[in-house]
Amino acid sequence: MTDSSSLQAVPNEPVDPFDPETLRIGSLADVDVERVLTAVPVRRPNRSEFFRVHPTFVTDTLVLEREDGLDRETYLVQRGVQDLVAHELRPVRLFVCINKRGTVFLWPARLPRADSNDSGRRWAETALLVADQARTLWVKMIGNRDLGGYEMFRAKGDLGEPVWPDKSFRDLIEIGFRGRLIDREDHPVIRELAGEL
Image 1 (cartoon, helix red, strand yellow):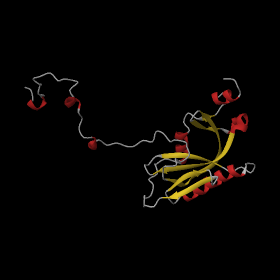
Image 2 (cartoon, helix red, strand yellow):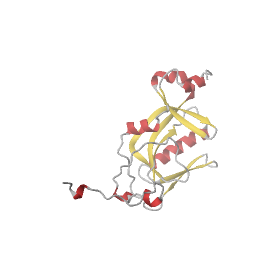
Image 3 (spheres, one colour):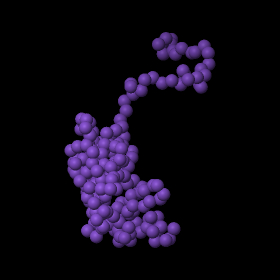
């Protein structure tokens, strides 16, 4: 004897696999999702965005910056190979930032060099002043050539507190520099700088 509840109704008409009504899914509101952080841009804050700086996720390090047309790539260089590209390395203060849309990014702010000219030093110093204010305030940073540095603008409204991702500083650095770590002597960037590629 067959249980009638286990029988499924057989449709009388064949189902059109390309009919939009057949393809439509239920509301996504019923689906449980978790946002997974898959990319962390490495860049300076855009002039049009308000941002905050994480109060404790900051470190001074050396990076190698390469420009290819309009694109700029920033690489971390492991200590064991830094001597091979020492003339290309820049000292930076690496900040974890977030903009008001919730996008997390790493900002390698240049550190002022003792031997740099006055205007280069002012750009670096004013950027660090803005970063310091951004630990507690939503700010926007805009370069001003007449000033020879960055101007800071505070948000007038209450943008609330930033919602930082549930990731460690180390994890954010790993995600941000995935594919941009120079860790061996035969790395393509080292070979290109040496004229081998």
